[in-house]
Amino acid sequence: MHHITRILYLALCVSGLVSGAFLLLCCFGVVDPALLFQREETAVLPTSAPAEVPQPEEAGTANAITLRTDQIDQAEALAVGHDTVVLPMQNEDGSLNYVSRLPLAVESGASWGDPARNQRLRALNERGELHTVAEISCLRDQVLIQNDPALSLRRVSGSPWRDGAGYGWLDPAERRVEAYLIGVCRELADLGFDEIVLTHCAYPTEGAVECLRPLGDKTGALEKLLRQLQGAVADWETEISLRACADANEPDSASGQTEALLAIADAVISE
Image (cartoon, rainbow, N blue to C red; front, side, top):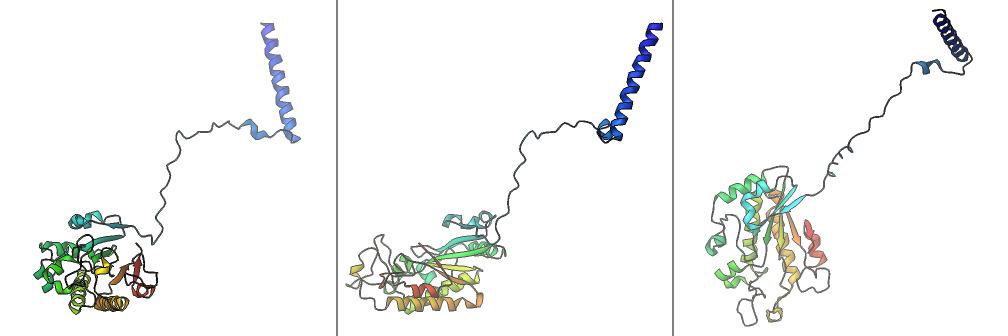
């Protein structure tokens, strides 16, 4: 019993000495007393890398979709998520993808037959957040020429000229051609399109062009036509844009397009 008592007494003395030494070291600033209460923390590492936050698109960035003729009736659904939608409203053969009231379009069979088409187009164009573009084949047009060959560019022999694909080309200097294209652009502007892009607003450069009758001032005829079309849609503030030909920057270009002509357009699309 006395042996156990001595051990306990010795342990108490040692404990007192240690405590006293610790307090003495704290007084002299050798040891930080906060260490007595500090707990060691274990760092928690993520099991996987954090997901990247998607960055918003830069404001004003065009996000366009160009649809085919067979997609026009689904345009409103297909345009979701896009800023701009481009629709073919006049095909290369001259057929129209909307219902036209122009007598020449009805007589030649160029007009689209389903009246519901215009309603769907108008609904699409009334979506304020969407920039809608109607693309028309301006002068490459077989439908009208089959109906009235006098509207076409002519061969030296007097017959309608056709390119390598068998398509005829309208004569931009012909008054009835100008009136027809003005009517088409006005109808498209009235449907609510923000922009009209003229493709084939030029003279042909491929095929047997050497067989064409002398054409006179090609650039002058194209400039007059372009200004007439711009004026025709001014009330709707619809833009008239132009798809440039490859030779537009060349002097005496075969297409008749020049830098001066391109400068007239509201916008130019390069090939």
